[in-house]
Image 1 (cartoon, helix red, strand yellow):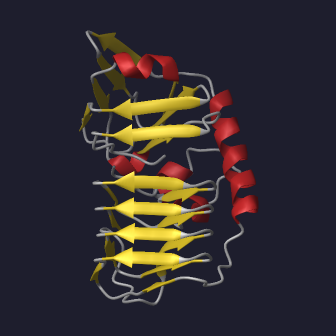
Image 2 (cartoon, one colour):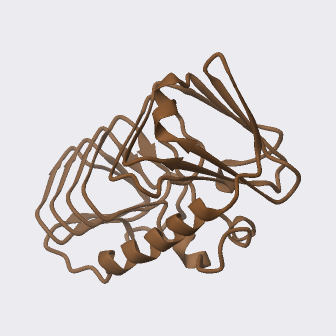
Length: 232
C-alpha cells in the first residue's frame, strides 16, 4: 500500500487545526497495533502498539537519513521478518526481534529504546481532524457503474466525498480524476472498513499527495491487493 504525506498546498485546503507537521512527519500513524505483509509504505511509520512486518518495505521516498532519523518508531514490541528499511532506523520501546533485515541508506534496528512520541496526544489531534473532515459537506461529483467508483474533482479547490464503508466490498475499481492542483478527501463511515483486491487509478493530473482517505470511526481497517494512491 502506498501512502504519501500531503504537501503544503493540500494542507491549506484542510481545516485550520491541521498543521504542516501533522501530515508530513509520518505517512502512517497508528495508535494501536499493526500487522502487515508483502506491501510497502513509502514514507515513515509510527505505531503506538506492537508492529509486525513480513516481507514489507518502509521509507522508499524518504531522503537519505543514513541512520540519523527513525524510519520506523514503535511503542510496543517489533517483530520484523525480511523487511526492507530505507534511509533510517527502526526503534521500539519494547522488544525488537528481527530476521533478514535489509537496509538501504544506512540505519539500524534496536529495541528498548525510548521515544519522544506522545501517541495519546497525537491520537487526540488526528481524531479531531478526522471528525472535522466528516462534517465537511460533500461537494464532489461521482459515478458508481458496474462496480467502478469514479470521483471527479472539480476545479482547483477541495472536493469532499462521503461514503458508507458497507459499499466497499462491491467496488472493483477506484478512479479519481482531477487537476494537478485539486485536493480530494474521501470520508468513509463505519467502525470497520476493508479495501481489498481492487484497481486504483489517478487521472487528469491529480497526484497521490493530494488525496486523503479519512476513516473517522473505524477501529479496524484492512487494506490489501490495491496500490492505494493517497494518505490515510
